[in-house]
Image (cartoon, rainbow over all chains, first blue to last red; front, side, top):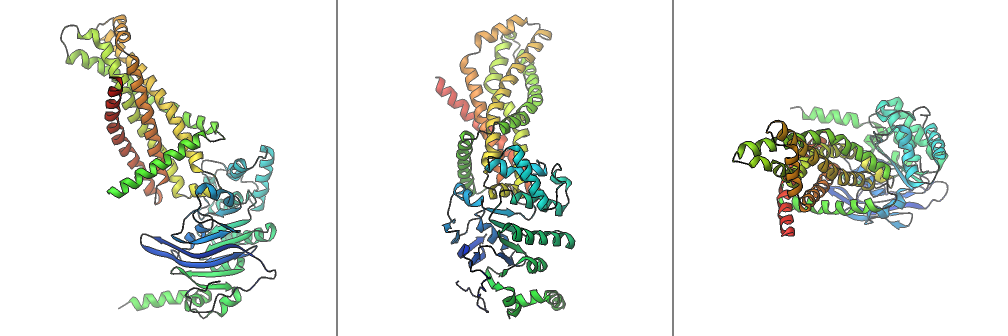
Length: 276
Length: 251
C-alpha cells in the first residue's frame, strides 16, 4: 500500500484473523469540483468481509469517495478496481453488473416517494430477477423483517419517520442480496437512539449476511461500533488508515483530537481567539 | 447562457435523445409505464387543450367575418378557420398549452427525484433512469400530443361552425363544404408533422432539465420555470423553420 503524505504512522494494515484479499483496490484517486481538489491521490484497499469506515468532517470528500466505488461519480484521475475488474472509465451500462453486487444506502434514504415501501423493496427484484410476485412478496417481507419494519410494507415513504425511512431504504438495498454495502452517512439527521439502532443493524447485517461494508460518517460512535478498520480523510488525503488500536496510538493531532473528543475544546479556542 | 454552456447542453440533449429512443425500442417494452404516462400527460390535458381550441376556432370565425367585411367573405370562413387551425394554430397552441403543463410537470417530477438522490438510487441499483422515466414520457407525448392536436383542430372547426351558423347566418353546409373543398392532405400532414416535432421537444427538454436539476427545492423551482420559458421559445422558433420546411417540401 502506497502511504500518502501523512505525518505518521504509516498506514499498516493490521490483518484480520483470516488473510483476506482486497475486494476494492483504489489507486491515485483524484477529483476536483469547480477548481477545488476534493480528493488528491487517494490510495486504499478494502478487504473482503471487513467493515471499512471513512471518517471525516462535512465537505471533506467522503461522499465523493464512496460514489467512486460504484461508479456514480467519475474520478479525474486514478483507478478503482472491483474484484479484479477496472471500473473507472466504464460506460454506465457496463457498470450495471457490478452495481447488482454493490448496494448503496443513501444519506436521505432516497426511497421512491411515488411507491409504497413494499414496492420500493420489490423494485430491484422485479427489475433484475424472474421471481414470481408471490416469491417477491415473501422476499420483501423477509427484508423488512430484517430491518425490523415488518408492518411498514403498505405505507408510503412520506408516512414514515426519518429513521424508519432509512431502515426501509436499507431493506431495499439488501433486496438483491448484495456482496457489498456502501453506507453514505447512515446516522446523519437521526436522534441518538435511532442512530444506535441503525448502527446495530449495520453490525447485524455484517455478521449475518457476510457482506463487505464501507461506511462513511462523521459519527464517531457509529465508527467505533461497526468499523474493523478506519481511514481519516482530511484535505483530500487519508491522514490515517489502519485499525482502531493504531488509531488510538496515532499522534496525528487532528485525529487524536477527534478520537478524544477534544474537537469541542478546539472549537472553543477558535471562538475565543477570534474575539479581539 | 454562455456559448460554451449552450454547446454543452445541446450535446447532452443530443446524447439523451439517442439514449431515450434506444431505450424506447429496447426490451422489455414497459407498456404499463407508457399507458400510465399517456393517461397522465395526454388524457388529463384534454380539457385545457379542447377549451383553447374551441374558442380559437370561434374567434377565428368572428375575426374573419368582421375584419374582412367585403362581400362574400363570410362564405369562406370555413376554409380560413380550418386551414389556419390545421396548419398553424392547432399544433402551436396545443404544444404551448400542453407543453407548459406537462413539460413543467416532467421537470418537477424528475428534478425532485434528482435532488433527493432517487435518480442516483436507481442508477446504483443498476436500473436505467432513461429507460424507466424518460422513454415512457417521450413515447407517451409522441402519441398524445398529435392526438390532442387532431382533436383540438376538430373542436376548433366545430367552434367556428357554431359562430358561423348562429352569429353570422352562414349555413352549416356552406361552412363544411368550403372546408372539404379547400383543406388538403398537405395541410393535415404539415400540422400533424409539426406536432410530432413539438412533442419531442417538450419531452426531451422537460426530462433533460429534470435530470440536470441542482440544489434542493429551490433548484426544482428554477428548473421548472426554465423549462416553461425554454419550451415556449423553442416551439415558436422551430415553428417558423418547420413551416418553411413544409412549404419547400410541397413546392
